[in-house]
Amino acid sequence: MRPLLKGLQQGLLCVLLCSALTSCGGHPKDVLTPVADTAPRSHRVEMLIATTRSQSDIPGEMFTGERARAPNFAEITVSVPPDDARKAGEVSWPKKLPPNPATDFATLKADIIDLKAAKAWLSTSVRKTPDGSALVFIHGFNTKFEDSVYRFAQIIRDSGVHSAPILVTWPSRGSLLAYGYDRESTNYTRNALENLFQYLAKDVEVKEVSILAHSMGNWLTLEALRQMAIRNGGLPAKFKNVMLAAPDVDVDVFRSQIVDMGTPHPQFTLFVSRDDRALAVSRRVWGDVARLGSIDPEQAPYKQELADAEIKVIDLTKVKAGDRLNHGKFAESPEIVRLIGARISDGQTLTDNRVGLGDTILAATTGTAAAAGNAAGLILAAPVAIIDADTRDNFSNQLDAFGPVGVSSSKRPAKCRTASSVNCRKS
Image (tube, rainbow, N blue to C red; front, side):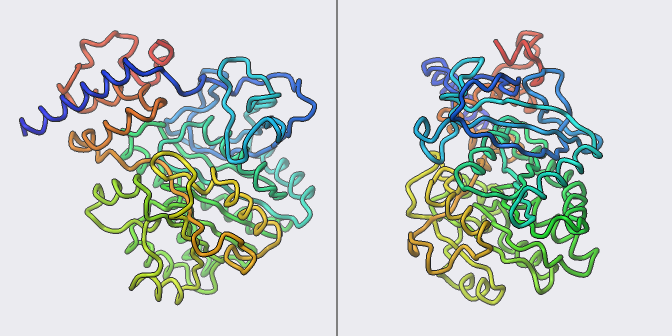
């Protein structure tokens, strides 16, 4: 054990030195404070939020990474800069507050609402769509609330989707070192997501439902669909498309989930990328069992199994887009996000002969499965913290859970002993 701890301490020292020598990077916190719409050419994205996160006392944060006892709802409007001021696939975070809507993503409206108001929002928004459709997005691991909001706004704008946008955001602490907590938070959210699916299934105004999930959000999505199918004896016909982007899901578990959903089931489209480094680490954490988002769909037994289950596959391995971990290609590749939007709007599958990028289109994956919930997990996560500026904010806080390794919590400033401390976050 001592060699392990010594190696860990050396790794942490390296991270701390790199953090000290590197600019802070990242983006301003608490960006959800509404500002005036001062850019006439900007684009507005209105969305409904359904979340199991706890409400925050900080106005510009709205929701934390902690778990609420009951679901919360919100209505948010995001301003996206004009097309000539931003690259497709890019979230233009403000460099300082308040943001400039002409060049930055900006929040125009951010209201916490009750269930009755959420139902009214959905009814009004669905009636505005040309086909009575809704798009549900479930984000992945290592995602703070504001990250999920701005990423979904980017996807909606760049894809050209006209469906009513619903963001399901679960309690992620937004840290590479909180993998275990995030995973349990998806389990905590299963019933809430199933309840949303059940409501959409029964709402006569909703004619069609598409689902887009990323990374660990795929586990939550598949489990909620599985529960719904078992409870109802199948899945509703209006659930047309389920898009699984870089799913951090055990491939053996996925087999059983699909069986439990029965037939007919929605059109599943699987985005895979064999160079997804985040899923490579996740595979080591989960006992060297293949993760669904990084399989080779042309190899046995996957090719035949996917064909038998009528699951379409888009291989994004050769797509040069996304983060350094190759885990977010589905949202950051302009071609892919437009493809997703076109197929949702047209009611077509994602793999017909008009794809245009051929067989080499590669999919997305998200958040890094780097922490195993123990000291060894920290060793895996530490190198990633060097290149992930936002994660460095949380790094020292996460160390407290592992006892006397590095700087103990008793030697840290009192204001920084909890991850939720406002003073700590801004120091």
